[in-house]
Length: 243
Image (cartoon, rainbow, N blue to C red):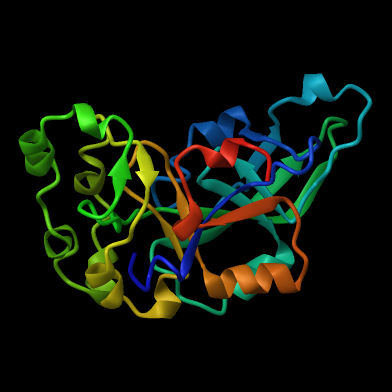
């Protein structure tokens, strides 16, 4: 474990409330490249309740943070305003709307569009499910690119290329994390304000890292709808169990 492992947590939808909404995008939103590319200004992203039919007459809990999967996050105006204080690499804050079961539109919501993802995990010090069955030499060959090769130029150049090259390995089988450790050398070269939120690349699930400064802010304002699990305590899959 290194110092960066103690700075970050993974953020997920809360499991404390049964009525916490699972988001799903409407058809037009689904046809955009949200979550994988920079969005052009225009129509807000529209989300609905993925399990509306199961709610029946229950009221919907519209939380301060709402999730579609693990990496697509919608936040309220207050959190958006706070995040705008920082130049977070690879993050575009984009207008969003939630359409509830009665058809009412809830505006002043914002989608955290991670249009660039960072392979910031330490292969040597992380553990993966099924790794004991892998040929170690094959594993080394597959992941032998060091941090400098992934992001040759630190700073703005690091996130300059938005082409297909960044995502050319998306069809490959990606490892399932068991215990996560971060790449200290890579993160040390990125200013802290630029890495307060990170969408991890190269794993089977699109985890989002949240820095302890953001966690403290969410706790201070008593934000709802989320849970965080410190990297030092995380075991792959535990987000699916009760807090």
